[in-house]
Length: 469
Image (cartoon, rainbow, N blue to C red; front, side, top):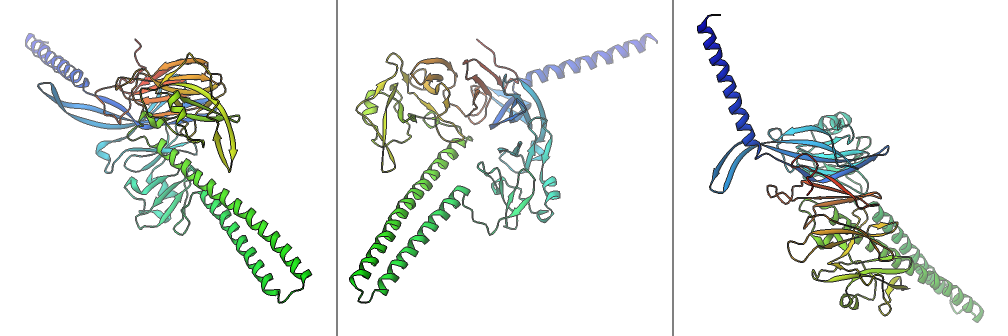
């Protein structure tokens, strides 16, 4: 090689290295403005002793930025992934690209729920994935092949898909307005255009009430018929008529009580479903007062977290409710319950303070999102309370025994939670503590071992376990 060629080659190599270095430097600068966040809700799955948390993760890769004063404007390229994390340690297990934002025509991106051991999501279309392998099990193409009668009729907007957490089915309004129910196990859709829309429990209760009402009408007609047949009856016949009428009236009264009980059960069930639906709503997170209640029942007793003044104002009839006074320091109290007219009455005159030395600022029993009731552990409850009053107060979680003894406490370092999941072994908490993310995005996954109070977790923003102080 001549000297001239060596100089040219060296120059070209230097230019390539400089360009590569500049590009690497530019990318390292741009990466400072990259953002990752999980889109709640995160789903929990368990199979063969393995626990997995599955989330849609939004990755915004910065492509350019401009700084003016203290503010930065940037352009990003957004890709959506499915990510699985270990349900014990929080460690990242796997990820699978779903779609780039340029391939998505309809929003919002949404996690619908879990059913038949599949994660159902909407990312521009209805889709389902195996949470353990991240293999795609359903999309519009697969669903159309399973349901040729719906080819070309699956809607593009997610508002026409309704995931039923009670049954695990998905109600679909096709583009022609017909109604269908998708079986999430078989992926087969059934026409339900003429099917009643009541929830299963509601349909059964209404059918039972209707049957009671029909029997009552039959009794009334029987009494009336017997009365019409008594034309100038003898005393003996008249007495027989009155005896038979009294028997029928007793049946009627008994049926009335049964009907009232069924109607009350239906009302309570509807109220409970409303509570559960509100707890399941995670798009905008939950306010602190929504995640707890201040009373529970166990073994014929009421257990409550109240200050003395609050307990004096408690209703005589037991009900689940949340107290809102943020400066109240509450203690665990216990008192008796009696039953009257299908209601539980609270003995307000003889409460017992189970641990006089322990109180909880703005405390309450953490709710189980699957049933809308306080989370009950074998040894007690999970009590949430604040570290201090005001916006800087962080939510703490304590395991409090039935005897009032404090077993452990964890400060979540979050003033509000976006979501939480409880299992017999662990409590999973989701939130945001990164100022670069919106309040509806999630970067914090905290896992609390309920037996010991030990914590682990993951930061979706940094894509690694959180740093410890």
